[in-house]
Image (tube, rainbow, N blue to C red; front, top):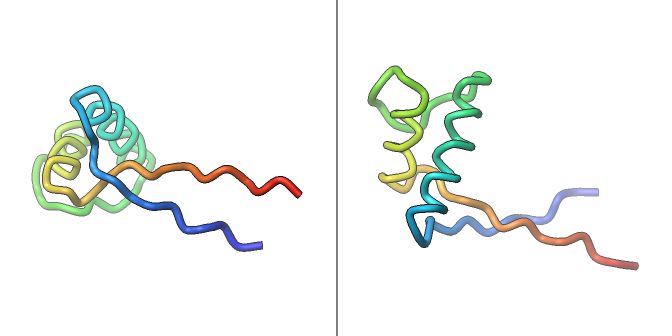
Length: 66
């Protein structure tokens, strides 16, 4: 089974912005490739990525009930 595509949407408010940036910082710490050039610090780079629109949150789609 393939996973359904998840729509990406930009953060709607500052809480969501921080939540997306912190999740992205964790990904960068685990070894993900940065999507923008910038600070070598993962937290700052994550904020830059979200601000530039290179990263956005994904809506989780619920599994269909059979």
